Length: 361
Ligand SMILES: Cc1ncc(COP(=O)(O)O)c(C=O)c1O
Image (cartoon, rainbow, N blue to C red; front, side):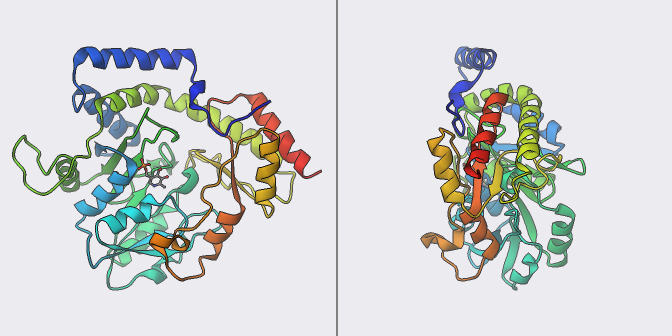
């Protein structure tokens, strides 16, 4: 058996037909930027996540940059960022001319709760990242940010559809940023992203920023850019959104299967809270001392795995920062993502489990 980490060619015929029908519809309509598909997507996400405003954009990295710009963060400002995340989180901060200040994570890769120690008079915002789909404790985050008068930009790129006490990832902060990169739980057939906010002022600013500073054609009020979503991607996302909860159920079922079978192997640290509603089961990341050996072994058994991520940000040259970042570094050396997606079947999950068990024999 061959188990790829993720194979997006495996979509079932029903889904492929729905996507083709959507493509044909858009082709016939002749609207390829903006239009009904974009309006529908924003309205549906706004309702599903209970976010008063949902402004689509070109990708998740732009969503972070737009959030920072809309909040007026720029040169001279500091933004607290976890040491373990996808580069976009810090990249966006640098793109707007501010400085990312890294802080260690807890053992699950979420910004450690003592992040307040990084606050200086120059700190303007903190970016909690709901890494692997697991949400940070947002009550504590909000209380601390309030005490220091900081903005919260939630990087919810990996956590679409996770809810903490009934409230969606991305709706706790001043702005929440989503990515619809194809490998995400809600993924497009290309690039797309979104900003969530409950502030009409911020929503309006972000709408202007994605469209050359204009709300009305030819009325340019500020310097923006083009970060509009493609109509095609919005249309495809509308198709996926209808199937989202079903796909989530499959993820949860497979995650449960992994958990119950791998919990007997004491050398493996399993992902915490992956079956809870505040985890969308985006990635199933185990931690193990012999990570690289296990990865190689699984590769030889034809099981694809991935590492999210092999280096912390302060250890990369563009983001270099001195510090211990012990837990984030440990995760970069010990974390291994097992295949988990709705396009797999149960016998493949069983095969991955058996292969891991064999490694420990
Ligand atoms: C944590 C995190 N932040 C930001 C992004 C950026 O999203 P995008 O790839 O859509 O630009 C991603 C996705 O790749 C991500 O995983």
